[in-house]
Amino acid sequence: MSLKIALSGKGGVGKTTISAMIARKLAASGKRVFAIDADPVANLAAALGISEDPPITPIIELRDLIAERTGTQAGQYGGVFTLNPKVDDLPERFSRERDGVRLLVTGTINEGGSGCFCPESAVLRALMQHMILYHDDVVVMDMEAGVEHIGRATTRSVDRLIIVVDPGVRSQTAATRIRKLASDIGLEKISIVGNRIRSEKDIERIKENLHDFDILGFVPYDEKFLGADNEGVRPYDNLDEAPKVFSEIIAPWLS
Image (cartoon, rainbow, N blue to C red; front, side, top):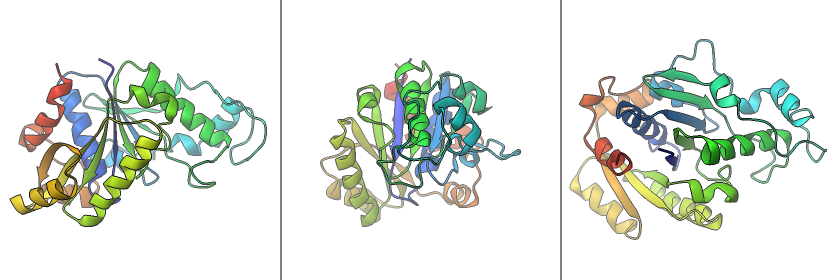
């Protein structure tokens, strides 16, 4: 099963925690899962309960590795370097595992803008392309509030972009913008998941404001869930205690 899922959304909506829950549920169902943390603020390890001792250095910050694979020093712009560096060994070499989920922290480009033409970008794009096009495992990608690193060449192989929203209008406005960015690069299989739902009124508001989106489900507000998110630990250590909506979200991908 070669399932590729990307998650995006406005900061603070619980995107990383939702990503971790989906990855864990898929792994618990018997799938081999790679979780990719491509957010500049890397928190997916904590949400998965994966130790960060020793600390995890994002691929994008491994300057010696980037220099080796591209033939030039990281941080250089406009020079000559390899555009298709070797990356197929990186997922196994730099990942950490717990409960059937292997985590790879890639990071993202923080300088030079989304059009950065630099060695770091070459490695990151090649790695994303490898994971999406050539990796046989299920891949769950926790993205920043954008889709730049998926790239046009790989959009057809992304099975679903899930945009996480909460009852706040700003997150719903962000969802519309993210969908526009995704559509611009040809990614059309887009859905939303509502998070931190307190009432039917919250559900109706999201349905009304995002009436033309495919909705996968609504995650109820839970102090334990929110507390884990705020404290940087994994929620529902026993997955049987998790809201059933997570089983409903992944159900179509288990057949």
